[in-house]
Length: 124
Length: 244
Image (cartoon, rainbow over all chains, first blue to last red; front, side, top):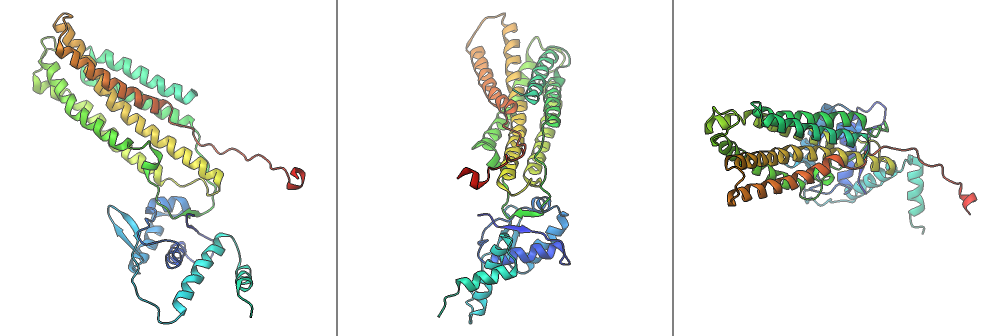
């Protein structure tokens, strides 16, 4: 399945929505290291945005070390550092990010997503 | 064949006829530019007639880079590079041989003059090469029609058709110029030796025929690049209860 992103109308600027969604997909493992992101013009045309908006999102992702941009290869997901989380908050946050992306892709709201977790949670 | 295919065919037929007539006159340097003008005019007008899948308007995108190679036959760009190299090597050689011929159509050029007469051809082919590269980038970067299966299929078909059309046009211009130059040289050679044949003539005609077959291959791609990828309204589904 190809991961997708969607721009929703609201107070959050489009570049921040792009950045946040790609960050979630990378942290959730849906975009693996080495995955080539679409060129700025392609993504801008698909989303109906100005190329500068997508470029800003990519710049911020690059500044955060999540992607690397090379002239020949384009923008690719960076290899992740092997820092092991000392507590379970990190892995939980990553799993939650992945689940949130899936729920949003399916069009579920927060209540539906929480209900799905409750239903899946093992009962004593 | 549909109307657009007829237009592209007409462009090639007219371009070839005009170019061959020009090559046998004092307008020989304009043969390739005239050929290119008619072929490109046919392609441009046919494209104005072809529909594009309309955009869905949903601001959703897949995070996958589109690659032009996925819309072209396997190895197509490599083959085109070889054809470009063949044109780059053969065309100056043929131009020099024709200019050195005792019945040179203009009769006042030496080898350097023959090369100079290639300048319009070189400019036209180089300009189209740059434009084709830009068009291929535009084809991959153009916004998608939508992410539902029907729109994805139409979008894919449109991109494949457009990429093949640009590729076929490039091939027709290169192979057409090469085979035209070869046949033209063969014709000159035959006239010089008053129809007598030899190994040289046989070799020239064999090369001309080979380049003509390459031309025919790209001509097929130009005339039949594939379906345009129109999005048609989905047929209304029968209710599940009615089917049961």
